[in-house]
Image 1: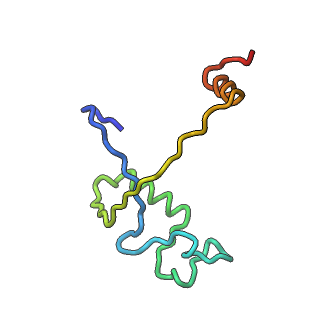
Image 2: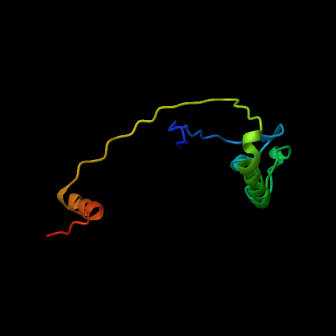
Image 3: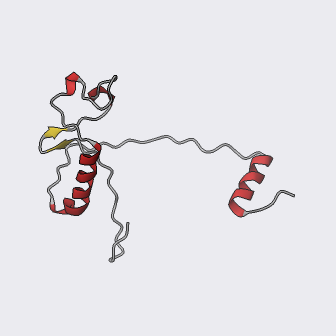
Length: 106
């Protein structure tokens, strides 16, 4: 994102793992496989937000989040290997040209 000073602000992807020291329930291990809306017995001490509570939390973060103190507890980075796309064969080249450039097949 760019602000008025033409600086580029980096976006940070983050995961919310606790609220006021209480860990949030997340992932399949925290929920009962038979009743997905119920916490598993091993996760009874975790905070389970219902849909409406989660929406209200998102609204509060968007409204007041810049005023809050946030703590970063862990930073991880990784490299990914991405293979180049396969070369075009004639028919797929024609299809892609038609899609991108609006060319017709003659």
